[in-house]
Image 1: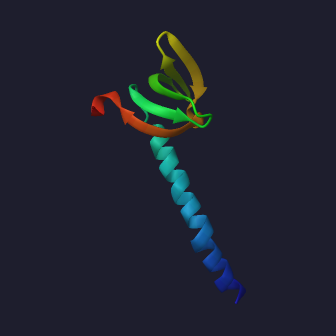
Image 2 (image 1 turned 120 degrees about the vertical axis):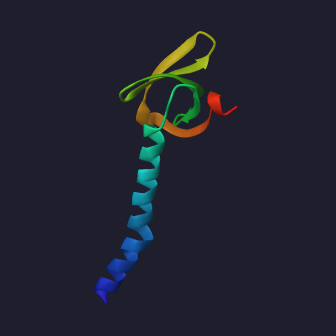
Image 3 (image 1 turned 180 degrees about the horizontal axis):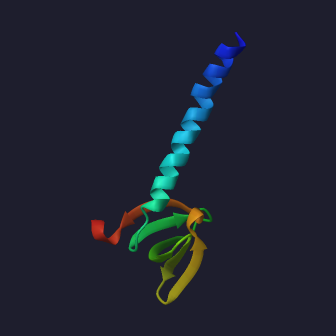
Amino acid sequence: MMIIVMGIFYVMLILPQQRQRKKVQAMLQALKSGDKVVTSGGIYGTVNGIDGDTIILKIADQVKIRIARSAIAQVEASEDAK
């Protein structure tokens, strides 16, 4: 009985969490210059450059900030897609 409960727990909680983590990692690895993104802090900007785990984000004219790649919460669209 305990094995069945553990199996259900694994299928219902752990597998979806692993899939979501892989999806986020793929999104972060696919980032490129020109992508419009939203950070986990709610800052909207355009990726201006990528240096390993650091991203230069343009948030206004003449305003660029350096953030961690892991701070990106969502990719909206790239300039190329328009």
